[in-house]
Length: 254
Image (cartoon, rainbow, N blue to C red):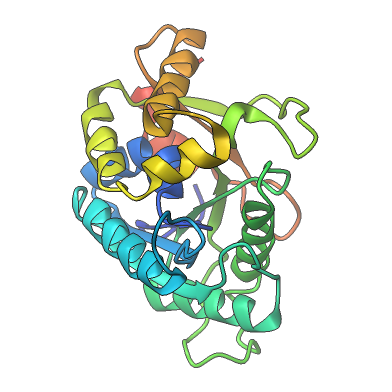
């Protein structure tokens, strides 16, 4: 490669438990490769509670997220957006840019822009826009611009469908996470508050077992026990070096 990207990862999603559900295996593998790992959410998931106020839910879920992040030695950040009412605003974009610059992120993971969940779609737009201009000195934030635009990757949506239930395009690559699946399980287990909520919303008795079953099914596609799937953002304005694919080459499966 003719460019060097900081070995600093920012897993940047909408709600506490999103990174754990869709990205935790690769985060642990990258941690073991010497990357600094950071997990951030645009909201505290304050609507995602049962028998709690929004304020109580936010405090509970942020604590769960911090504990889950600690399993792999990651730091957790919340940008204070409103769960269920998240909007792509200048304020949220500037907050995202500030965090990206503060951490000097070299690699960012976020949702796909056609994810089934509206908060996920808004997050994808905010993070993509923030990442794209994080290296421009004229952006009005206090943090110094990055030397190079970060690499951007996308994580999988629930059930691999878009808002209309149509299948998502096939992933760019699969990663074998079989030998770190116990870390992913432990991270998910910290999100206790979501068990009743998901049962209420989706009529799924055990959402996190459902997530892990998805990883098992992805693994079946490529003859491993468990896999996660990813897309690299290759649109204009972004770098296209396959750094994650190269650094995790022994775990890539086809």
